Structure formats: structure tokens, C-alpha cells
Image 1 (cartoon, helix red, strand yellow):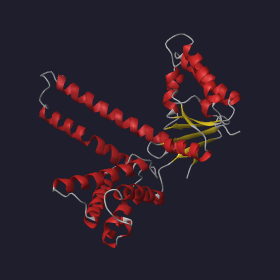
Image 2: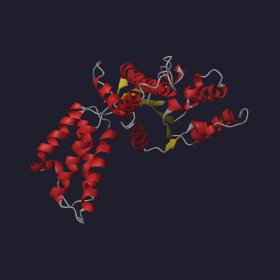
Image 3: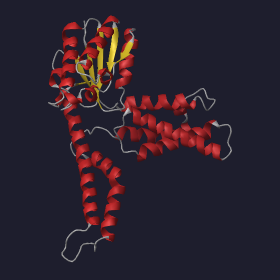
Length: 317
């Protein structure tokens, strides 16, 4: 019997949705398991709860067991002082290897490096570990059409897709260009669709428009989505090693903070005393710069881990 799969990758690309789709495809009940809920405050309670929970799950087999963000659940196992969590994961690993009969485990994670104990990701624990990458260009177009058509059909009486309209061809070409040149996740594309349609609705309601005209409204929607895709710096993987998009994202994220620091420093340039010692304001400025640098380094390290995961595990196209 297959044991299960671990789906690894960045948020917003359908890992949780895949767990639901697996259960639907296999026509089996789906059980979402939050392991943190079994932890108790008394000695031995957590281990007892874990054994009882796994026995209950086993009694419901065949079924699909979904463990969401498993790296956060077991993050405490690397702490040598967290003896309880190590015992709990030991019980879980033993069940997966020797006692599991007919329960297909689907675990999702954003990152496993230094987050999960190595024995959980070793060969044989899961049948496969898949890396879920951002959608390719064709898939991004399908995701975009799905979200737009689903929402437009509820607002405008039309029997055809707005993508078939020749009058909107220039706007659609721009949208396709952004999708091709930027590494969007599925959730980011959905966000742009939501924002674009919401903005068009609010604009029409503000001018007293009670009924949306097909051509004008859909054109506004496409223009808004084009603008959303244009200004968004996607939180995504890079296809090369020059980090251009990553620095663009970090620049966009911290521009306001960095500008504030520069202005603050200029205004308080004479705040040091006669001995050249830093004032409290200067110390605050330096601390704020250190915080921003730490955040930037943290995001770069996350990005590097993503590249390693992508190379290590099998890609799920």
C-alpha cells in the first residue's frame, strides 16, 4: 500500500488544494490533522493523546490524512530540551513505518531545511516528495481566465469569454506579457483578479451605475488587472542567480522605511554631543537599520533555501 506524499513549495500554489483533490480523486474521506492539538499540559498526556488519535484515524481507514504545514508542527523537535515533541514525533514515525494500514498521508510544507527532523524526509517514509513550483505561462493564463470568468459571469450577462473580444486585444496582450515575464503564484494571480474586479465595481457604484454594461465594465476590469499585475512584485522563485527580482521585491518592501531613516538621519545630523558620542536618536536610527538589514538577510536565506529545495526534490509539473 502507498504511504503518502510530501508536497513542498512556496505558498499560494495549490498544495492544500492538492490534498483535497487527492481525497476527491480516490473517493476517500479527508481528515485534517493538527498535531499541535494533541499536546497536553501533564506528563505523558501528549504521548497518550497522540497514540489515541492515530488509533482513531486508523479505524477510519481507508482515508486520506492531511497534515498542513508540517514543518511548523514539528519545528520544536530540533530543540534538545523539547523532549515531549521528540517523543510525539517518534510515535508518529513508528506509526507511519510499521502500523499504518490504508491511511494515505498528504503532508504540506513551505520549507523543510533545518525545520524537519531528517528521519521524516528520508527515503521510504513518504512514497514521494514533490516540489510545487510556480505555474508555467500556460497554466498562469488558465488560472487568470478561471478567476476572471467565474466572477464576471455573476456581474455581466454574457455568453462568451471576455478574452474573445477583439476590442480588448491590446490590454490582454499586456496582461499576457506580465504573466510571461513575472513569476506569479496562483494566489497572486487570484489576488490581482479580485482587486481589479472590486475596483471596477466600486467605481461604477460611485457614479450611480446600477447595471454593469458588458463592454465598458469588462474593459475596466481588464485595465485594472493589468495595473495590478504591473505594480506587483511577486514573492516567487528566480530562474537565474542574479537575484534581480528579489532585490526589486526587497527594495519595494523597504523603500518607505529606508527613506524615513535617511530623512531622520539628515534632520538629526547635529545631534551628537561635543565629544562625538552618538545621541539616543542616532542609536535608534542605527538599530532600525540593523532590523531592516536582518529582515533582508532573512528573506534572502529563505530564497536560497527555496532554490535548494527545487534542486533536491522531484518537480511536480
